[in-house]
Image (tube, rainbow, N blue to C red; front, side):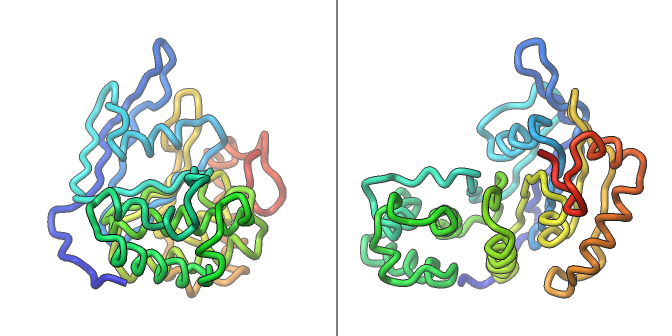
Length: 260
């Protein structure tokens, strides 16, 4: 993986951001920052503007009010559905961003092959078409495609949704390791509290109608040092906070704090 790069002056900043779709206000006064080497998780129920926030961070949309400043040179987005090209192999899908950057075929395939191997896809799987891969494999290809472009800001939209618990945990650790090695910044949106606690350095809890931040949490331990007991105890303590409980209580699913 690439060596960490100088990051002075690079930050993703939201300041009192508001956003509307027609007459419907989606975001109301969202303020936060994401610095290099840190992972910020946005957590809240479905339909509360998490994906809209990612689109604003990626400059796919312009806010209706407030300011969004993305000072990073290269931003990559990992979608909930990998959106792989069905006629290309896993390897060529993973190398697609490098192709768009003008990297030669041999070099981009070598880089993509290395990333796929780091993410647990062997040479045989790399030559298969997406339709022959499992959901977890396809998600790994989507992550590799994003990381191959060497972004300094990685945006992840429910990247582990629909995967079984063991595979989610494995991908958490793999992606976190790759992010740490490159000292990149990351913004991840999820509706799963345990997923957010396992992976992120900072949590922002969002409430809908219109979306606003109701609580923030800085995690004191490095991600590898967080035991399952720590994760569930922290989740339980967070859910005891009235503002957070009000977000999760109507749809909460057991100790995982998962909103459906």
